[in-house]
Image 1 (cartoon, one colour):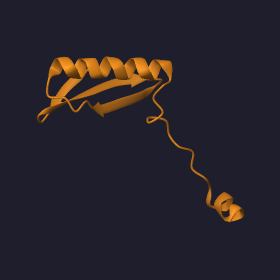
Image 2: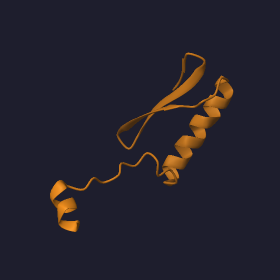
Image 3: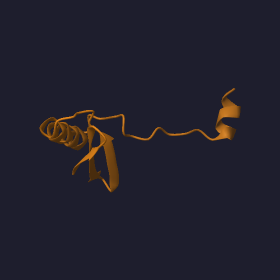
Length: 66
């Protein structure tokens, strides 16, 4: 789904049970749809590592390693 917020378009869709809400940075609806299609395909192929959560270490693990 492409939504216009202010002057730029944003895309919103669901992938692996998570809602992805991203700014496309585009002012053209056509380019925003292309951005969304590219993002969906990169997510499907597993090439986008930005959206993966980083594992957090517990305080006890941190203190043990220092």
